Image (cartoon, rainbow over all chains, first blue to last red; front, side):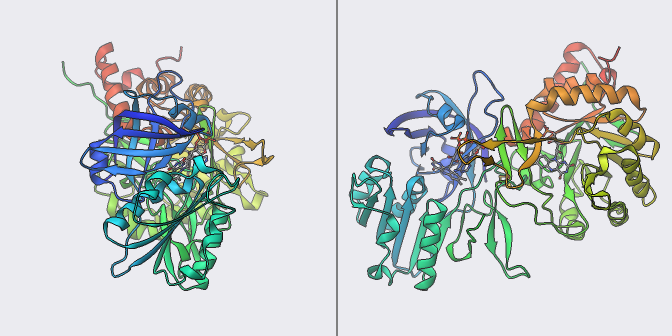
Length: 266
Length: 304
Ligand SMILES: Cc1cc2nc3c(=O)[nH]c(=O)nc-3n(C[C@H](O)[C@H](O)[C@H](O)COP(=O)(O)OP(=O)(O)OC[C@H]3O[C@@H](n4cnc5c(N)ncnc54)[C@H](O)[C@@H]3O)c2cc1C
Ligand SMILES: Cc1cc2nc3c(=O)[nH]c(=O)nc-3n(C[C@H](O)[C@H](O)[C@H](O)COP(=O)(O)O)c2cc1C
Ligand code: FES
């Protein structure tokens, strides 16, 4: 059950230019959180209480139930995330969470591929951790602008996974796009998880459909309420009806959907 | 000290307190059950309901603006039949009044909706006259006194239920619309709906909303809303439900002083999902602090 809590920032650091990692003390949220869920958060305003107005949805990058903490990794781009980036240890955030239907791990499945691009790498880390815990065979494919933006790179390097990374500027790994790793060596995969820019996920979707593999995608839409009330966050999902699709709420019915059922055209 | 009376009687529609939630911002109510004790709300205006299910607009449907937001949801809703069969049974036993916000493209649509919703469990209808009239080239019903009145008359003919007419602020003289709907038989007037606006992405060089234009809501519109409540309160006899940017108890009290008998909270629910409870407590504290025994004593007090 998601809740609203005013929580304390334990630490915040700039892990690469404009990319921040924030650890938050939120035992109630950590206790209930599942991989793939997100929080809807706001800085606690000292001034200008009404501006910027809305909360910002950010994925859980780490859930530590024992310590009662959650970790997020985000890029400070606009007004809200730049304000979040000014917070220091001891400051407060106002958060709603955990929200959404997270990733599922199908039973009797062994070989997994995880494809993350840009900020889309952030929500995938807890999935990989879980898969490794379950002793699954995991290939992690990540791509970003440069080495600094390959989130959780050092963590993956220490894990028992097959790791392939790409950067657009060539500062690490293969120079090019992450989707170029999707080749015949991976077609015996059982299941795939992906998150990243829509163009990237569309390529992953086409490859998955061509090779008859199932999987899940985590989507991003602009959000108002985060409760399922406002209908601002809808995405097109295939269903069996006359038009062949329906709008689903990314906040509470997602953000994770079956990859083959997402329609990327808005 | 005894607790002050918070109950309000809106021309026969009795609310246990003046705090209601604005249509389109609170779903059907249960969406907020993790955050709010729904039984403490005065009323819930459910999502705008139409005769047939509506898919709404493509995304992006919202854009943040200074101290506000634009929305162009496009009235996505499951349609009145689904509402009656599947949703009403889930909400009718709560203590709040269930108020169904209705939208149509023709006068007949509104009449048919009123006819279908004339059932036990629905406590009142809120007529959204900001919708385009397809027979009048898409001009909104709420922009012309005669068109607005014709909708209210058609609905009135179908039901004895409490009728709330919700005014659009996108008009030259809101008092003339208010008088017209009062004359046509509305029991209550609610105001304001969103103000039409736009935001352009300067890098893509195009509007952010897929629908291009959208309705502005939130703190940014509050002064406009307070002014309109203040004007309409002096133009009509029927009670008012005030809304537009209410984010805390102080804002709510401002609307009561301007002449509203009850208030609705919209966008603020997104910012703080518990805000309705805080507003309710804050209004009560204000009354106690100022020594009032009854909320009705402060309604319209700022009008001299
Ligand atoms: C389920 C979900 C999980 C996410 N997880 C992460 C994450 O782990 N790390 C991360 O860096 N980012 C994540 N994002 C994207 C993040 O929400 C946006 O980058 C952020 O809202 C932008 O806010 P701003 O203040 O920087 O930008 P502004 O331009 O000031 O934002 C204006 C408005 O647009 C919305 N908006 C702008 N860009 C996006 C976007 N890409 N997605 C959704 N809403 C947007 C904002 O929420 C706000 O309402 C996630 C988005 C969703 C929907
Ligand atoms: C996302 C959203 C959806 C809305 N949908 C409706 C609707 O279906 N019918 C309606 O009459 N008003 C609708 N409104 C308008 C609100 O009910 C309210 O009149 C307006 O937002 C002003 O109040 P606020 O500033 O407190 O949000 C909507 C507003 C928002 C923000
Ligand atoms: S953000 Fe409001 S319904 Fe999803």
